[in-house]
Length: 213
Length: 254
Image (cartoon, rainbow over all chains, first blue to last red; front, side, top):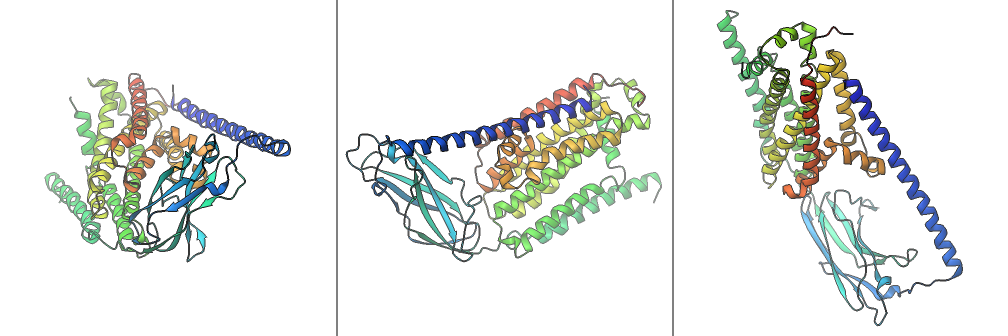
């Protein structure tokens, strides 16, 4: 096995990965098309899944409605989701995905949750009638500003319905300047200077021993 | 002869001040990054975890680039200078030659790592991240430097031309570094990006550092998949070097 063989094998693995991922993309695209076809054929004929009224599900925020924090801090947003339905034979209709939405009130844009929260959405298979489930999100305050946070819930049984939303939490994030918390200057200048001094002294000593200096 | 080659390699690396100039250059890069992160008003708005993660990424990336460059000419330069034949005539076996050269590169990584510790400490000042950042940077750095150096020495012995082995090793390194450095977040989330990240030890390292330093998941049990992937990669690279080191020989460059 020579280096070229290794290179060829690595390239072959990358090529294989590309083919696998492209085929999986194609497969998921085909599944999406077929599921949309299924949905349209079902809606044109009959609906046989028991539906729950969207008013049965309520989301409530239990955290304070106004939160003040400092950038870098981690806060907790808590709430609960309740299924107010009574007497239904099963709870399939109550399952869905709970998630949060953060809107930047200054820039008037939704915030990409990439750095803000590791847990973006939570799948809830079902909520028993009359029962509540606690919900909790840890949110890192990445950037200073004014934000509104809402909890939302998309019911699995009715993908075309509007999401159920909680009341908003208003969040004020103050900036935190990490200006030189550990005094960088001695390290930034000291380490290269110390290394130069050490290498210089080794070189000088070696030069003295060999008669260069 | 025990570790004689290792001692020669180390003294060769630091024979004159020019030999150690790279470590001063590396410390200046760390100084510049740390100084900008902590004194620039815009950058200082970043969370300390993000700053620490950025520096850890730079330390590890620099270490891998340095080790690949050194290792990919380890055997080929001996062949080109005509000294490899005399090295093979010593009582040292091919395995000993390969592993003493590997050890000298790992030692140089430890020097670089030692230089980076003051910077990691200053940036993590006031947080609970100092020990984790130092431990994980050191651990992943050591494993990746060992792996890439082993692979590069093996390539160097096979290709027998420093120019070609450096190019091949750097290409492999760039392919593996690409998802972490060049891929946008949206591309990383595609099936291709996810598949590439799952088989890429460098991505596992960067994702683990992100998880430890930014997301505060500091327990090794929370990093087991990343740790296992990087260790498996290192073992495979060491096995490749071990296998090829039995076949060290001097042949004319074709």
